[in-house]
Length: 232
Ligand code: C5P
Image (cartoon, helix red, strand yellow):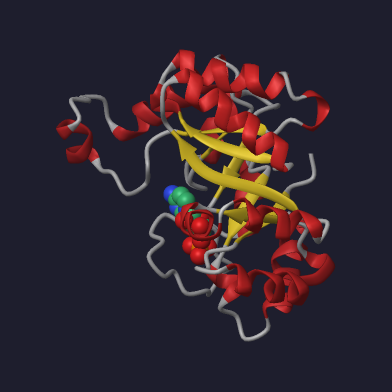
């Protein structure tokens, strides 16, 4: 699979979305909409992106009872999104309900991605939650649970991607934020890798926000990242 660049639309209003997409033009065909923008603007923001012929990763990290998640996946599918996230910690029945909902939507169903352990959590946070396993073992366990129950893949840090590729096999989607071109500002990202390293390790989709959106020339920054991904 040719790896795909996804640009994170981490902006607060719909008004900012059109100019970003227009500026990035044909270089970027896939955009991530997260909780901030979706909570502010709702489904209109998804429609604004798909109307421009772009694909959408709707990153709402669903975690609820199976029936509710099933219906949320159906709603996302009706909007025409390509990727949706849920928390693997929602359990087998919830993940299977998301799978069933996607299967019922036919060939244009969204792919279901699982979030394992948020990168904001460390070992002591897991202990507070009653989890004794180390973070890495917990990521592997939840990744296997999700993909064993119908998820199409997971979201993972670029530092985990090689191990998760080995564990989950060749078909799993591995979507990695935390990507930084060599020499770029890290911002609050700590566990980063370059685009070429992430692709070599097995990422199928790279999610990049600030290194593109805050670049003096965002289109040039996106082109450079795509070139690096293609050369990997
Ligand atoms: O600006 P930056 O490239 O860091 O943005 C990365 C995107 O991926 C943001 O939307 C961020 O919320 C998301 N993300 C992340 N790290 C995670 C999970 C999600 O950076 N562990």
